[in-house]
Length: 75
Image (tube, rainbow, N blue to C red; front, side, top):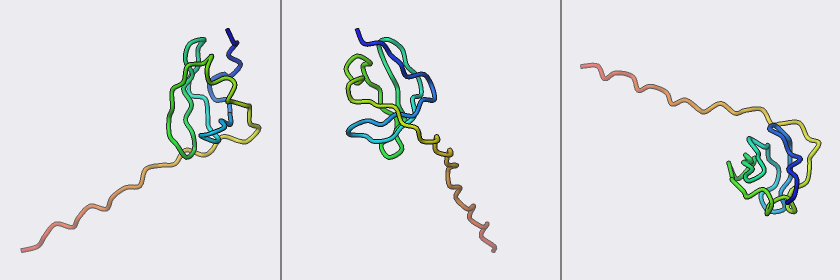
């Protein structure tokens, strides 16, 4: 069984999904939040060959855009 050398917060690069941040990992599963593809869950032993460590800084969390409230209709 492949050992999981990626801890929470580690920056990784996947061959298909690109750059991402490890959200959680165990011997069985690893969850990675990719910059352009969102959060993906993988079987750790299967995905380890597709991952490599990245030395980039984690991206800043984006805050959700807020919708403006509609002005109340005047009579």
